[in-house]
Length: 161
Image 1: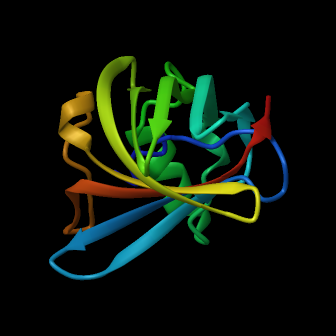
Image 2 (image 1 turned 180 degrees about the vertical axis):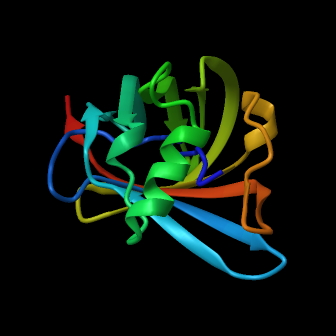
């Protein structure tokens, strides 16, 4: 639930600097929402000319925090963090505000399309994932469920080569 995207991108977040962060925007049903944020991103986003690449960017599922400890634990459990402790973005290729990469969550790899912009030596990226595409079961607790679509935003500093 809290999904994954924890993964998400994972994804994307590179260089383990204070500015690196991945935010999952989770919508609840019948009403409500929350954010899960991780600032513990590993990997390097590299800029060469007008292009960006990254071999591997990862984030620990259990580094995502929602502001409520019990919800954090439910999120980690839902994302199967014991068996698959990280969300990983690989083979990132980006130019002109658009990027592609492979996202792995819960042991399942899927391609993702990403949009981004640059500012102050960092990349601000967005993409959307469906929890069900990563074999994650519908999450529900006390009658409140998590919508299948998760919006992911990340801020990553880059290094120039």
